[in-house]
Amino acid sequence: MRRGRARRHPADRLQPLTDHAPNVEGMVEASVQFGQYAPALRTILHLSDTHLLAGGALHGPGIDTEEHLATTLRLIERMQPRPDALVFTGDLTDLGEPEAYRRLQELVEPVAEAIGAPIVWVAGNHDERPAMREHLLGIEATDEPLDAVHDLGGLRLIALDTTVPGWHHGDLSDRQLEWLGEQLREPAPLGTILALHHPPIPSPLPLFDILELRDQTRLARVIGGSDVRAILAGHLHYSTSATFAGVPVSVASSTCYGMNLGRPALEVNGFDAGQSFHLVHIYDSTITHAVVPVVDAPTGDYFSAEWVARMAQLSPEDRLQAFSRKRA
Ligand SMILES: [Fe+2]
Ligand SMILES: [Fe+2]
Image: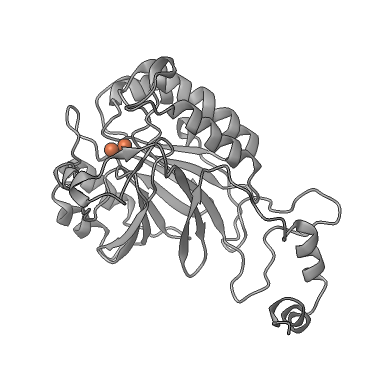
């Protein structure tokens, strides 16, 4: 969350945190319920690996990381319902340059302010802790890990710093694991989500084997039996999911560049495509993670707020008749 500010939350744990009612005449609440599940209690946008460079420099084979992030943010600004938080799971900058952190802040903060969502920054192996602390978070420039706890209206979000200064692989110190165990001692009303950079899952790509989170069984011991409901991660530059210690893991691809998994496994490289982020919905009974591609493509125009309003006027049976029944 920005500068460690806590978000206020309602006492009733079963109420959505944000006001989801669009202020447009004739429109119904965006979070209507036409099916078995009540609307999500919390919504998080999970972004990763922005890899920003100072001076608008291009990345690798000419990838415009800043423009890709700006395009992503323009998309986010228009999304409804508004998310309850923007979570960035590391590799915020490519080289840890102070100017890149300041630019990142300049780009993201106005959007976050406009939509009323706090930002959760997680460190990645391309980040540099002192520069990230000073130029993004506005705190003392030290090498201390950037671990933090955020309260999203009863949903606990813990940012865990898996980076190792001077290295690209991931690790967690005994002190960090002890701290995490202490945080998890008491369950949170809506449970806990862990956000970290190096995902505790396998990858078929040899390069990520070398750069994995080490000694993962130590982390498994700490979160086993706790209220952790999901782990959000990045680092891989492709979207994937798995379980770890019985907890679902969701890895968001990058806003900067994707990994071309269509190539032979030993020849997979980054390409200027596959940019996306995840839309995470937290329900009472489950959590869903949807990939949102950042791409300019023709889009249909069949459903609208007015269409939803029309459906809302009908009884459940009439809605089935109006929309589910196949016509001859
Ligand atoms: Fe990355
Ligand atoms: Fe990474």
